[in-house]
Length: 141
Image (cartoon, rainbow, N blue to C red; front, side, top):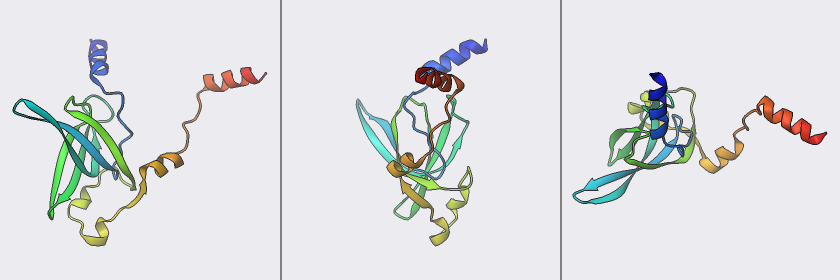
């Protein structure tokens, strides 16, 4: 029974989702339907939390301040209404949920950032699996 659920989930999950973490500034491109027209609306803000793992039900909470008022939206990551998610900056944070930023003002609400291209270049490579190392050693012989 669970294999059918896993197959269904895998079929509906998106493949091109970046590694979103709390502290990132992201642009979420969402499809909005108005009457018979459909357009893309961009919501840019800080990721406060990522919940429910990396499965089909995973969500991100994004917060931005618009005209002095904080606006938060919860986006299902694998929803068909989400066109794409772009990471603008990668934040340096030490906790998984940043809900304290809701009430923080001034300097306490400030995070350290890197441009995403720089942060992506500095991330360490994933360790190689045993099969890759065996293949490389057999090719060098």
